[in-house]
Structure formats: structure tokens, C-alpha cells
Length: 337
Image (cartoon, rainbow, N blue to C red; front, side, top):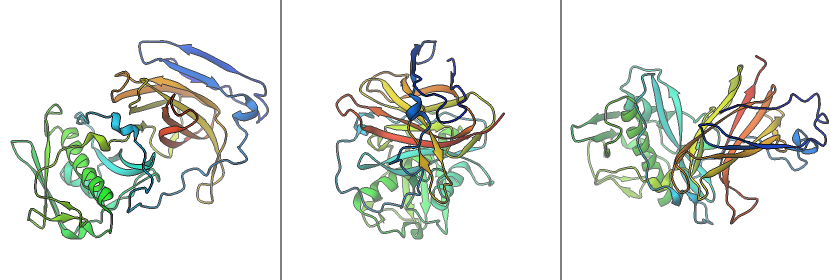
């Protein structure tokens, strides 16, 4: 798909009065984009939000829940095999008054078997994106095996469950383990990605443990698609420094219209001391590969001038105008080539 090039502004007034919009078509998903009027383009909003404040791990579910867009997700297919040493790790993230599962990729830095390495990363490492979190403790013992019947057995020590959480977060934390273990097995080529995987969880070698005091581990578990985030940005990763353009954006999502909305906004300030997101510099929509009501991929490219930006992708629900449902964001740094 043709890249979207942003004219390099000389200052915040360089784009005053500018307006730009058209549709580009290609073999890929349709993309509609608009350059914001310059009075808004780079000027920081007076009530601008702080960029990527670290999220406090939520041990309880939100008290006011709405019907989440994740209800649209009807299946959660396995990842496909990759030749690179990449670990898929799922995290929790609060969104739309609910908590969903999001995935990040990490480089394999140990000689551990891929499922063990991915689970140890999930239990003992912080997410790249501060919007995500985990309530697992690093276990003193962890073992993983897989049977010819596509049952993954995870045997973990009880100290991994030290956090105090409610029923909803306990269920999502167990789903986090199920998704991470099955993703690692599939990406490592240990199973057919078209197969159905089950995960049996033992605690200190025994079945029936009540995880986090709420979830009985008395039977094998499968992926629950209702817990998959309705939108997430796969690439670029949080905090990525981009020295060559175009910036390729990839992700997945679901919506009733078969499209998602996106925006790119400048970020000012030091994230350690509080950074501020300005008004949208460029925004538009992108089509989902699988159409309305189906979880599918999206992709587009951008050619922004050097700077620090917040990339946002979300559901623009016609029934809820002005509300960015399922929002996922990434901070990206565009450096001079």
C-alpha cells in the first residue's frame, strides 16, 4: 500500500489552514487518511493527556463494566510458526471497563525450551508497554511438556500465585498462561497451528489447586476468545526507534463495520517526568482483512517527519460517536534517517 507522507512542518504554524483528505486503494485494505488542520495538528492540547503513565496492576475487575467489543471475537487461532527465536508473551490490559489479553514479542535470551522461556518471561518480566501488566510471581520451579494428544502440561510451584486478586482477574491470569503456552508451542513449530491445544496446569505436581484462591485447576483448559483484546497494535512495539521509513503499522482487531480508526499525535516532554500528547496530526481509517464482525489483521504505512508520536488504533463505533473503544496505543520515535 502507498505510504502516507506527512509534510515536514517548519513550526506549529506551518500547516495553518491546511486540510487534506482522499482515499487510496490498492491490493491491500482500503485506507482513508486526513491531515488535521494545523491549528490542531502539532499544538499540544491545553487539556492534553499524559503519555504512557505506568499502569498500576489491577488486582480487581473494574466496578462499572459495559458490554465490551471483545464480545465480537468468536475465535482465537494459534500463532504461526516462525524461524526466529521470538517469544510470544500475553499480558493483561484494562480497556473499555474490562480487562483483556494483549501480546508482545520478546527475543529469546536463554537456552530454555520455548514454552518455558515464554512463561518465565510472562511471570518474571515487565511488559514493554506500560499499559499492560501481569500479576504472576516469578516461580521457584517451572516445567512444561507436551503430549502426542496436543495437551500441554505446565507444572509450576505455588509461589507463582502469591498475589491477591478477585475472581475476574484470576480467570484472566490463568487465560494469560494458556495463551502464552499455546502461542509459544505454535510459534516454535511444536504443534500444527490448525490444531486445538489444551493446557493442563499442575501446581507442585498436583491437580485441583485453586489458582489465586478462585480458579480450580482440575481439568485441561483451552483459549477463551472472549478475553482477546478487540484491538491491538502488533508493530511497531512500544518505544521503538525508527530510523528508516516508511513506518509500517500492523495489528489485529474486530469491529461491526469491518474498519478501525487510527491517529498519529505528537508527544512532548520527558516520559519520566510526564509527557503530553498533542492533538491529532494525522488520522484515518483502515479496513480489516476479514471484514465486519471477524477478528482480522490490518496494515498501513506512514512517512512522518522526525519526532516522537503516539500511534492510536481503535473502534469508531457509529452508535457511540466520539468514543474510542478498544483503544490501543504505542509511543514511537522517528529519528532522522
